[in-house]
Image (cartoon, rainbow over all chains, first blue to last red; front, side, top):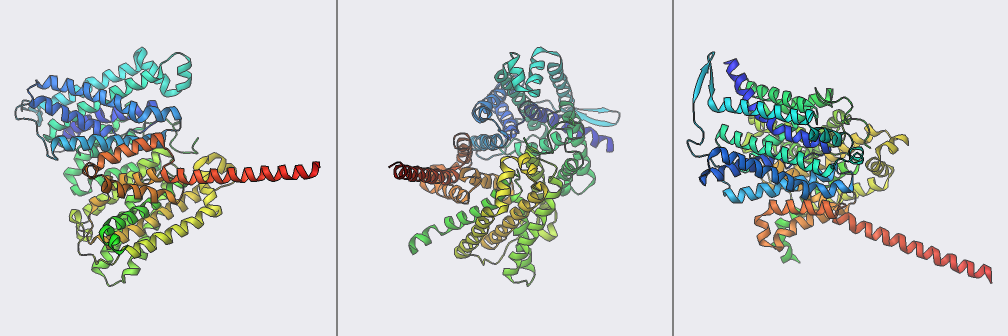
Length: 296
Length: 300
């Protein structure tokens, strides 16, 4: 029972990781909170759903929805962030304008779906269960774990080993210095937004499959969870976000199983508060990050 | 006039409540605190009043006072852990605070009624009381703004390191800002529950946060006129254009993006700044002409 709960927690934690990685990537590079990330996630599930019911094969639908959410994220950057970034000191304004984008996307989704809860048609994904060492694991759970592992490895490889990744990290450290060395900061921003959007879109599809329900408000709880993840892992830290997501997934499924379920949120956000109190830069974050102290 | 009042009374009340919550949000921004805890304070205030008014014999007037004090105390306590955080981290922490309050309200069913909330709260508040309370709040904030505390808040907002180098105790003033924000939020939360007859946790969720943020961003973050202009536009917009009312959320979103991009100070603040600039220009002209006159006398 306990190991089963931990397994289920790891599966949902790995989807949190997919979602939070994009969020923390944007924060790491731009130092801005993107409140529209939850809406991008929701858009991913919606686009995949409408592709599937219009007869597209499911794998193509996922690919299309990742491409589309990546483009949506680029659009978010162009509309809500670019002008503010040019003016400087964009921390607060960017938060507000990304909330604006979030409202627009959610309201479009509400109109499109008529405020209904949507389900993927039966048989979109084969339902199969395996028994491994006495644990019950579904094919979907295996695929999710595999896909997340591959994507996370690819992302870390991209950030650490390729020229593009080095440019991203250079811009994250110091945009001006990077620009003087010939790095095109705008293109780095667009890239990070595209990656973040595509990952969020995929996470949306996977969550939509896992719980078999898609609705226009589905992004909000994940958005709030992403805050917990990135704070515990350290804002802007990729490894921290992965570890924290898995921890959060397990912690959540354990509290749901063994404690009164109404308290789950209070416990999770209480934990967030505690971490902010003891280690504002997160358990795995950069000590030199700017959580505390005076503002510049 | 009376007919106008009767026809638009709900909108006027909505407007007044939004102004109140706007001030609670604004006082935090004004001190450079990136807090979105107003929803939590409002929830505390409204539940405090609702529980006291429906289950005990405490006079209604006292319930509102108690709600204000409770929310102020919570605000003061909240400020202590937040003292180490700045910017985005403060925003996340206050968001977590709101979530904790909401989930506790949902969980404590025996006490708070859970998801269904509390019904049957006596409807004791009308437009005139709201108007009076808003006026008193404005008077208090006006005095704070003109006193040394207001200047300290301005300094903290504009450049915290300069303020601290001038001997300002940052932590102390952040606590004061949180207490004020909590008190105003709790006060109007309490009034809201006495006005709406029934309350539930979802009233104070993400939508509430966004609405109050919209009011303050649209209106302005530093002047008293700010929340008034913001709430006025938000209340009138759906009335002026009916199709807009159906897409209220999307319209809010577009407004937030446009205002923060093209009018970062907000409508109300821009108006006040325009008058200030004009006054300064007039004084400068006056001084210049006086000097000219003096020079003419001395040279002849």
